[in-house]
Image (tube, rainbow, N blue to C red; front, side):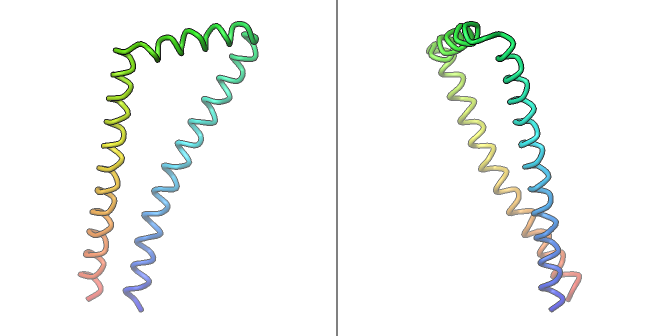
Length: 102
């Protein structure tokens, strides 16, 4: 019974950390969206289309595309690594709890 409560406590702690990180990401996205909206609405539709065309041209450039693909691969690898680290931390917490409980 004590072990179950401690396990729940550890999972709750881990979940709150993930929740805090998620909230930071959401807040950043919201700020970025708001800034883009304000700047876009001030520039007008014609300027928006002009910026979009330039951005698309840059993104389709082969050397830029290669860098973007490599960055995406690095981000994906980092995600996998972070998941593994979280699993390791959870196992460490579980082991610590088991050692302290008995």
